[in-house]
Amino acid sequence: MTHRIRQDRAAAWEKLAHEEWELIVIGGGITGAGVAREAARRGLKTLLVEQRDYAWGTSSRSSKMVHGGLRYVAQGDIKLTWHSLTERERLLIEAPGLVTRMGYWFAHYRHVFPGRFVFGILLRIYDFLAGVRDRRFLQRKDFLARMPGYRDDNLTGASRYTDALVDDSRLVMRVLDEAGADGALALNYVKAESLIMENGRVAGLNLCDGITGAVAPVKARAVINATGAWADRLREKLAGERKVRPQRGSHVVLAPGRLPIDEAVIFMHPQDKRPLFIYPWEGRTVIGTTDLDHRDDLDVEASITQQEFDYILQGANSQFPNEKLTREDVIASFSGVRPIVASGSGVNPSAERRDHSVWDDAGLITVTGGKLTTFRLIALDALKAASKYFPKIDASDTRAPVFRPVGLIDTTWPAADLKRLKGRFGLYTAQFLQESVSAEMEAIPQLETLWAELRWAARYEQVEHLDDLLLRRTRIGLLMAEGGSALLLHVRAVCQAELGWDDARWAAETERYREIWLAHYGVPAEKVTQSAAA
Image (cartoon, rainbow, N blue to C red; front, side, top):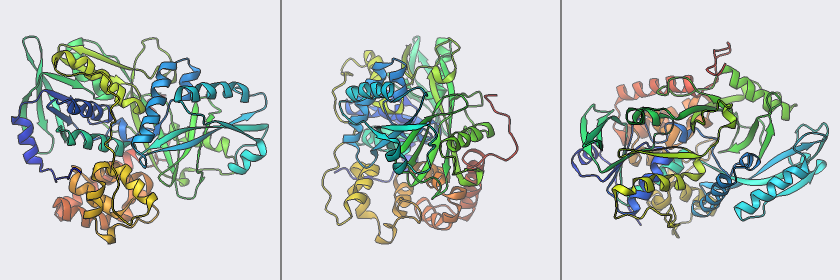
C-alpha cells in the first residue's frame, strides 16, 4: 500500500517550476481532480494548480448528493440521468463509507400533481436507468409513522426511492490522492496569472504562489481549464465569448436535535413550486437548495441572503408545520456557485440544463458545467479533447475504477467505524490508523469526526489556513455552533505542533477564520439585506 509523505511546499514549488510537464490542470475542484486522476493514470506528466484551496468553490458547498436527478427524467434529459445513475452506482461500490445510499420520500396529496401514478412512472424509469429496483409506496398512516409531524392535510401517502450522499470535499481529496499515487503533482494557493503563447497556441502558464509571492513560467503541451464558474476568465481571452451562467445554491444546517430525520424528503416549495430537500448529513439536518443567478464577485465567497434564508425556512415549515423553525434553530449556512453553461434563451435558472461542455481554443481545453456525480465522465471528455496533443494516450472510457480498493486492514476497530475511515482516507487508511494515537481516536463531542482526522489533515493535506482545516478537510465549521469556536483550544495545539504556527500566526488565523465564517457560513443579519437575485 502507498505510504503518504508530508509535502514540503518549497520543494513542491521547485518541482513545479523546474520540471517538464505534459499537462497542466487549472482548478482543484472535483472536475480538475478527476482530470488529473485520469491523465496521471494514463502516464501523462500532470500538474494541477488551484488558486484557493482544494474544493474551495462549488465542490465543498454542493448539496452533498450523488444522484441521478429525478427532475431531469421529468424534463426529458434521459441521457444525463442515465449517466448520473450509472456513476452513482459505481461510486457506491468503489467508495463505501464515503458515498452512502439513502432513501428519499415524496409525499402525495389529493388533487395535487404529481400523484402516485405519475410519480411511479418516473420512478420506474429512474430504477430502469440505474439498473436497480429501489422504489416503494407507503400509505398515509405508515408514512406519518415513518416521518412524524409531516404535513398531513389531504395526504394520501408517499413514494420512496434512493439516491446517495457524500462529503463532497473529502471526495475531492480522495480523487487527488489517487492522482498523486499515479505521479501527479497538486498544489493549492497557486494562481494561473496568464497564458504562455507560442506559435499561435497555448504552451503553458505563468503561475504565482499565493503564499510566498514567487512566480514561474511553466510550459506544457496542453492546459485544461477546469475552473468551473471561473472558466470564462481565461477562455474569454482566446475565444472572445462568455458561456458560463453562475448560479447560487444556498443551504442551512439545523442545530442538533432540531428536525431529526434519518432519510430525505423532497417537496415542492409553496411559493414557486421548486423542489427542495430536507436531509440528514453528518449527524445534522440540512435544508436546501435555492437556485438563483449569482451576480456577485466570484472572488468573494458566496453567502446566503436574507431572502434565501427566509425562503428555505418557509419551505421547511410548510412541510413540518409543528416544528416552527426560526433563525435560532440554524447553526450554519453554506452557498455554492454552480457553473451552468448558458443556453442564451433567457430561461429561469432552474430550467437551465445541467450538461457539461468542452472547448478547445488553441491548446486551452476548457471544461465546465455538469454535476458532481458525473465528474469521471466529464474528466474523460476533457481529456479526449486534449488527446490530439498527446497521440500516445487513449482517452476512451476504460471503465477502470476511480479508487483503488482499500483491502483488508488488520485492526480491532469496529467495522462501521472502519468503513467510514476507509471512505475518507482510501489507500492511506492503514497509515492513518498506524500513526494516530489512541487518545485522538475518539469522536469530537456531537460529531462523527475523530480528533485524529484534524492532525492527519494538518500533517498531510496541504492545510495553509485554519478555514482549510475546519471547513473543507473536516466539516467542523458547518456542523458546530459558531463554526466550532468551542474546539479552538484543542485545534490550536494540533496546528502549532503540525504546522509550526506561533502564537501570532494562530491569532491571525483565528481572526481570519471567524471573519470568513461570520460573513459566509453563519446566519444572515436580522435586517433584510439586498439580494443579488432581487
